[in-house]
Length: 143
Image (cartoon, rainbow, N blue to C red):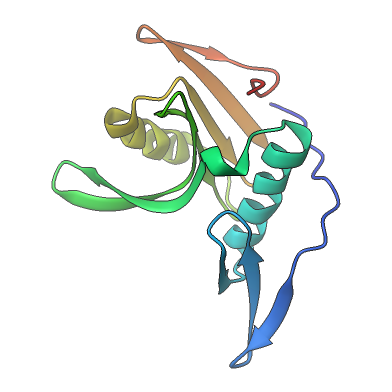
């Protein structure tokens, strides 16, 4: 497991039609503040503030095709114009189990990234994928 301390950040949050929304700085839009979105927004700030990942290299909540099925990934970081790292975010109460690992591995069939990360905001795990082998990491890679 990787120990991550989310950095402080002045999130822009407001109420609209009785629901809280948060401004996503990567997508440059307001989105519904769900428990999973809270984890995603904090993890994005960790990537940008603590790991110095450029916001311009981060894609959030984009559609991909897995065979004939449309899916949406949470976070993909690009390096040298190719997908390099994928993050699957879950809300804090969701256990990071085989189903979550299977989900991110399925996304990687299409994306072919070097790093896979799963997080629920409390626990974070990362794998380095190299020539068909997987290695558990103790920290996230530097950009």
